[in-house]
Image 1 (cartoon, rainbow, N blue to C red):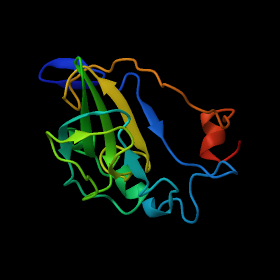
Image 2: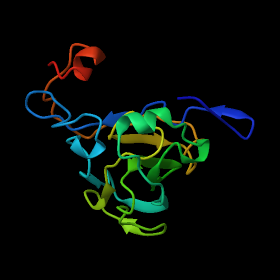
Image 3: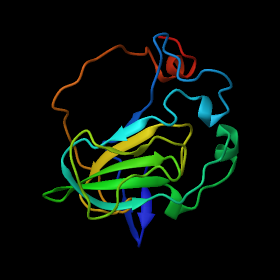
Length: 173
């Protein structure tokens, strides 16, 4: 998403990945889809991807209880990231973890964290279409006015794919 901040356009999430939990049938929700708490990823622990220092965090934005309520209410620009944590990796690289659950952030600015340490819980805050973890790396500790930069995973295991975004939306693998 493109953000115009202080007279300049930025794409902080240029290389972002939105993480969502699915079950073995490819479904992302059990029960009523409109209730954020029924999404499988809601409340999941969010882990630091690397050793670093917490650069900033926000934990005071409340959630809408339903997905449709969030979609019908325009989120102010300064709250688009929702509750978030920014992890300073050094060399001008910051990892952003966005849309965290209110009052779940377990770290404070200046705190050193280790890879795998719990830093918060996945929630449904900010500009979001459903509970998910928005993760991206940027060139500054500015949620909306930094530029997204590429990154790589040390390793991962591919468990499956969806034929299309429409198939994902219908829970069809």
